[in-house]
Amino acid sequence: MNASPAIEPSVAKLDGNGARAFGRSAEGMRFAVTGTIRARGRWLIAAGA
Image 1 (cartoon, rainbow, N blue to C red):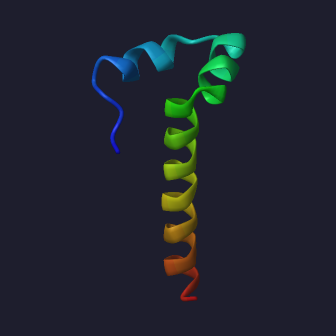
Image 2: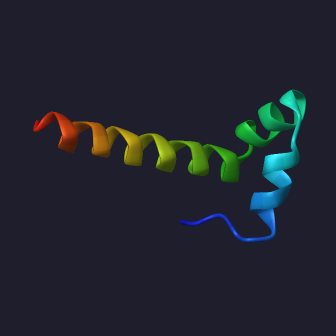
């Protein structure tokens, strides 16, 4: 589930167009969805829901 160490620094350097292209890739979508679920889970726990 975690991005590989080789991928993370590259992602950090991407400009807007590169970030959008990465977001359309399967790996990018999985990374975005996982992050969204984790953030939502923290919010629900913090809200006591």
